[in-house]
Figure 1 (spheres, rainbow, N blue to C red):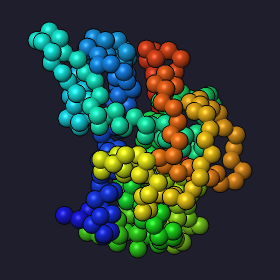
Figure 2: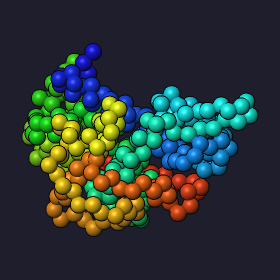
Figure 3: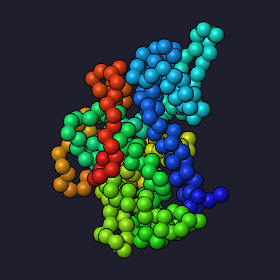
Length: 281
């Protein structure tokens, strides 16, 4: 059954990306995936790496990640069980630095340098708003759309006024712009900058290599020639004075360094993520 009024291929693409985000957004999931980077671990070894989780919290998280096909449980003997990434889980890891790159460019600056894992968690909070992916998709492909027209596309079987709560949230988050009541909606610079992230999520969720992200019909930038830069996880950026160039997904992905995504003491209990909402974060 169609979820939106978009063409079936686009509708399926949005649904896959929404599902992919739903796999990793629950609290601690990304941290567990990062802790599993490297050789498979016994449960006790993994628990030591995510020691802030209380007794009974890790098992259901691992079960959910196994059910999602991101983590594999291997029973060597009745007393020797290990957990590690599946091929699909390992293929997802390069998407995370792309999320951090977007966050460092477009989220508002915090009052302290944030480890990259917190940048990821703050970003995922914004991207998993209800109807966010579909709304951003439509605005990316059609540039400017009225609220009523957007409602007919995104939620054709619902009262069209239901589009406004998610739209207002995306405006508050800094991903969508409008001149005011009755005026059309369009992507902000930050919303448009999600191209590499959504392109990579689309490629990964459809089983394709991330190098195909730049060819995405909506989010791709096949002609872009990004300038490589060093991967820095805790960069504190100055306020932007002009829209930054959007990187093409799949080109010169940052070098993956698991340690970059945690604070200086990876075993310390993480601080609560900054509340989403307001401009950019």
